[in-house]
Amino acid sequence: DTRALSGPTRLAHLFMSQFIQPGDLAVDATCGNGHDTLLLANLVGPSGRVWAFDVQERAISATSRRLGQAGMAERVELILGGHESLAEQVPTPVRGVMFNLGYLPGGDRSIITRPKTTRTALDQALSLLLPGGILAVTAYPGHAGGDCEEEMLREWSATLPQPLFHAWRMGQVNTPPGAPYLILIQKAA
Ligand code: SAM
Image (cartoon, rainbow, N blue to C red; front, side, top):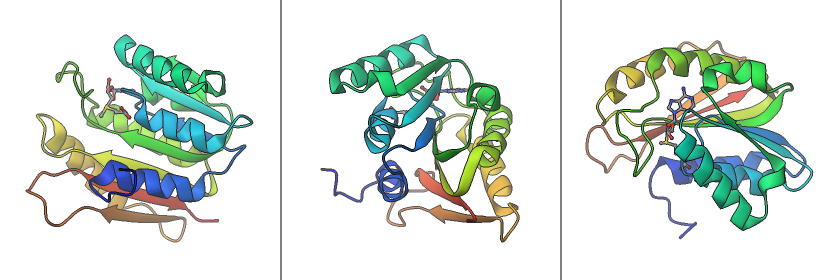
């Protein structure tokens, strides 16, 4: 149910749908099984472009398959490599960037996003954003290794300069401790 407001990824999708227009450029920094890439590809339409990163071959092929089934493969550039090379790979400012941190659902739980590379990539993502553009980060403090990444994210997002960036934290309150939440950042127009 795409209208169910359950969990931060759904919320991220809502915000992306609000801000990304046909013809826009966007980035999925962690494509995993391709759900977020598919959303972005859908939103940018045939005249837009999406760059999607993952360090796992398995994630790239799952995403490729999903896009192929939807007939949207040609508007997405899939990059087998870390998002810390975002600035090198994406040549032009973009309207939106998504990060969905942690491990690949159904995959190897030891292959996770890491604080240092995530931070590098987040900084590059903010530089790449167009004025008014949106960065959505889904954080998972609950898994092994997720706690130090969450600590980095908290410090990083709270110290972004105002009025250049509007940084938000959104999480469901009727969930157990360690539940995932969303960080949403808009670059001022
Ligand atoms: N967005 C995905 C979806 O819609 O299915 C889910 C992403 S999953 C929670 C996190 C992904 O980040 C994993 O597939 C993992 O391989 C990937 N990852 C880990 N380190 C990475 C890095 N340095 N650069 C890019 N992706 C990375």
